[in-house]
Amino acid sequence: MPRLTTHVLDTARGAPAAGLRVLLRRAGESAVLAEAVTNADGRISPLWDGPAGRYALEFHAGDYLRGTKAALTDPPFLDRVPVEIALEQDSHVPLQLSPFGYSVYRGS
Image 1: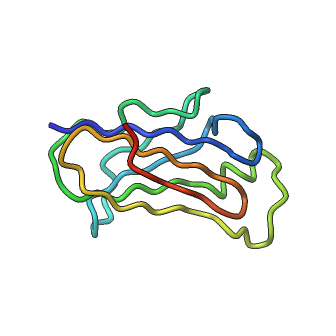
Image 2: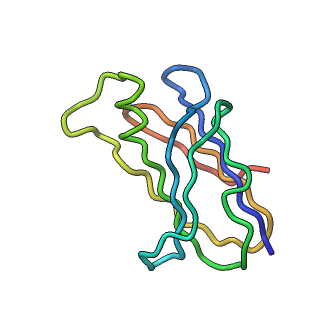
């Protein structure tokens, strides 16, 4: 079964995004399969160790950014960052985050 890990970096602060909540669902479904919070290094390892398929990650960026006292618009430009992936093998999904943008990619 493929394993899923993630790592979140706060590029505005130049530091790991510790304490950011991440949810995992099957793509197109509402039931939460896994939920975790990034550790002090901004990592969750593993978030999921289950069957292959299409999954949707939801990064709770707005809550995290409010917790860092970042200067945000009202409402915040970013609140939740959705990422849909095809999980066929062990995968790492890094997210680089700032109050006004993000980048996500397939890591190694």
